[in-house]
Length: 134
Image (cartoon, rainbow, N blue to C red):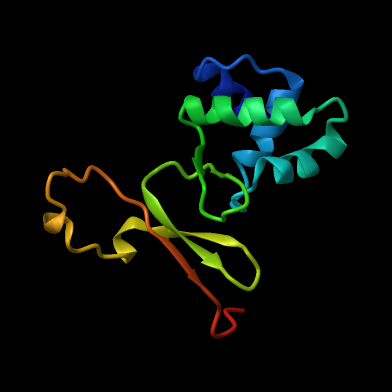
């Protein structure tokens, strides 16, 4: 909690109890939650938390560079504390989103995009597990 408090202050975010609770959860999870999922997880431990505060806090964390947001599931934005460039894989069976290293996917054909200078890209893969990784 202390590290999250310092991180918020370092990025110029006033650390209210509600913001701290939201940030503590979303900055330490790898689950790529939606705003509603953040609310569901955090609200029991922070009964004064409102959905508006969750949305506002998540947007502030994105604005200050602590989170990234992606519309890759179709139903809602997901929030990701891994802000360095990377790709995602969505497990079609479970809906779980996994981070994929940037170098794991090779992109070709950028030279064919006449009139555009590509400055970045993100690939979203979809698939199912084929074998147990236990």
